[in-house]
Image (cartoon, rainbow, N blue to C red; front, side):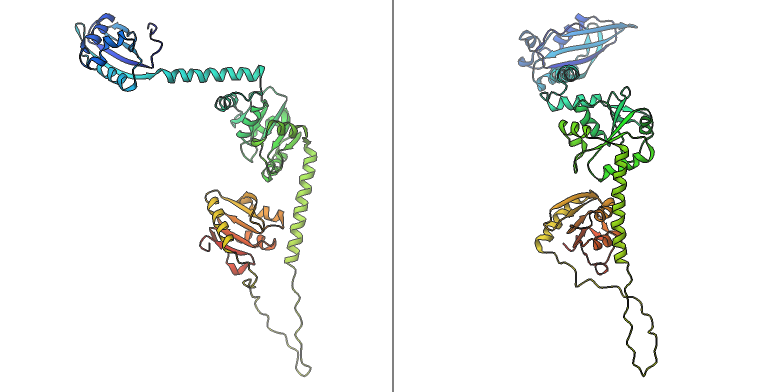
Length: 428
């Protein structure tokens, strides 16, 4: 196909032609001009449009085979969308080309500007990648869209578990293990190409194999989930160093300075194991003290006996369940409104808010970790709002830690069974 002469065209009409005989290019061009003449009016006359430059040079590619002809027609256009579509539709009325019956079918109308825009974006990605690898690896002057595309381009899937990783994970002697794909993307953004994600709390076989062969630094988020991942890795893999994001932050949110600072302050795995064991022992000790206090048997006073009466043993009575109705806290109208709003925000998240006395959010945790978190805090919790039902374990834990209110969609615990005030959506 010859080069289209009209470089200022906005659209290109692509048509397919099939003829029941042998035809040549001049036959097709003559049929196009001749059979559409006067059809569309003076404003859309093909000869006039071509003379004024609004229709470019018509290109025809014909192939003759087995006594029949077939090929393609390409017509560049600088008309608007509607006019270009009308010109394309007019070609389909052609029923004869030269001495043969023929049929023309429009395959598509291409928007040249979209093709050029796509070409610009792809070329921009290549240029930015070259710039980051050689001249300005940390430049922030390119648009966010192109930057994000380059980072995703560098991601690879490594090992049989298809884990998200940087391109240098195989040849690097030292690697960084992180929690998820977003963490890998953030490290790639700042030039760390020897990182790999675990994709969950369970340890994949690919990670275990890498830990045997390479020097490993584990980089986790600064929350309780990071400690759980560390415990899982210590149980089945050979870890050399450990570092964590600042408390309450996730690795994917860190800036370049924070990442470098965390990596410089990494600790040996043995030191981290000792600290985790110490924290676990302290939590268990506090839990045992609370259980001992609440499980201590109450001594009963002996019943006074009259001297003239014979001593008798009173019939043992069934212990009555204590009533906590007089001790319960009653929420104010403003507290009810805030509880109701927070409960609506949590619907569908399977999460829980832990609040202080000013109803400020101390933290948000998954419902599955709520009881453990409340036990570890042990005090300072005024209210809990959660997406789900209140079970017996959570109610007793909240009772022991002097929580005033638990707010949820429903409850499996009756209000009189615990001293904490239980509020459901119907109460609000």
